[in-house]
Length: 599
Image 1 (cartoon, rainbow, N blue to C red):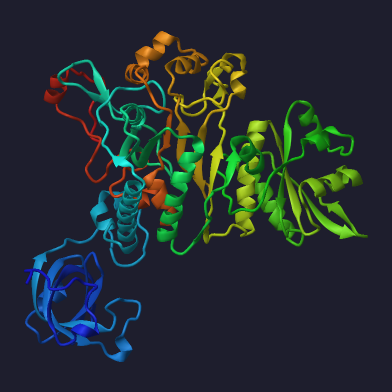
Image 2: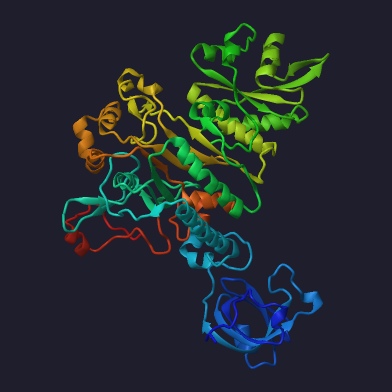
């Protein structure tokens, strides 16, 4: 028999009544009833209630024991009385009568409790993460993470992918986010970079003639943290396939994600493949975002033409439209009967988001016609109301909110308003996962800050133009074979069909100001590899952390990460980042200009 336990803390049932058992675990909580002491013993698997009488020799030592101390309990399994049964507990029909105990490890006074659902500041939780992870919800989240990764690994192997590990120390890349740099001791003055993604390496795996590759890859980016993005590092299911088109990748990935979310999605409904394909342009027009939440039935409608006509004299909008702005209408179903406060609160929300407000109109049926009501209805004639009703698919029960701005800001804000209205009306089905693909991203965009054309996505993507037609086309109208996998308003993955032709890659980079020599200098490994026979290939890299955040129904990615950094990219548990000794700096040939502080 094992020295510490004969069973774990979730195994015992009525079958073991009368048996002598050994359990080891943490003291979850104690309840002193005077003549009896009840002790809930917890391990990774569950909880077992143990009981000891005050006349027992072990009573005093257990009575003094602090929560989260580790003990070994020996005793007999007995049936609980009917009134003390706990149907919510796996072991709720029995308890262990303690005959002997051994304290394996004493716990000090806790900085935060494990028992209960009380919220504690993130600073405390991250500093004492090993305690935080004992809490039921956190323990469950991290266990889910392990199971999801195992599931994905098995699915990839079933689909004939080979698992490889690409380098962690590599060269800095001029494209993408800010690198984490690692100084070289043997080549002083030079630096490695931690990979932002295995992008170039996984393409070289395809060039090396392996047909399908994947890895659970750590990626490092020196960027600010957000609720859905960890500062510093994250993990992704990195994959690549040879001799494929976009649809081949979709057809491979969709069944995996359908199975994953069906298995781990807490019985929520998952839309079946094929997932909807929505072009980037249509997504921005209909949903105001390139990561739409399709659980929300509201679709935005562009009504700019109406304000160019003589059928409305709403001067504020007409003047802005004449200067090039656009007008977006956001339908709000079944809101005509809502009180004025509903509309005022949405207007106040719009102002708090930096807008000047949101004009709105309600509708009613009169003499078999739908007419407009509300503050701006007087500016619309009968024909314009009829047009709006038809174009926006409005009934007499609905309302319309309007946004007027330049196209970028109008799309962005109408997208926010669409989601806000959907949440306010509670029409977003929380019991569904709805996947879609966003396709046909622009290859380039105009950077207003830098006043130049730049890449809008991955520069190594294949343009949707024949190489001989590429230079004739307006760069801002060139689309790429780039795609995102989106679920419930979250981008889970970006991907692309890669540009495997060196001469075409030079042309693509030339549009943003890179000469042939600059491309060769900045991406020597990639250009060299592509020059020796590269197959057409493509792939994607779904974010592990974000997938688990969605499955666990958490709003912050740190809730599904084992030992995360805080928002300021600090490791409060281990005290990183930290200063290093002068000796270490000297070995690296580095001097710092920053004075050491006590913080």
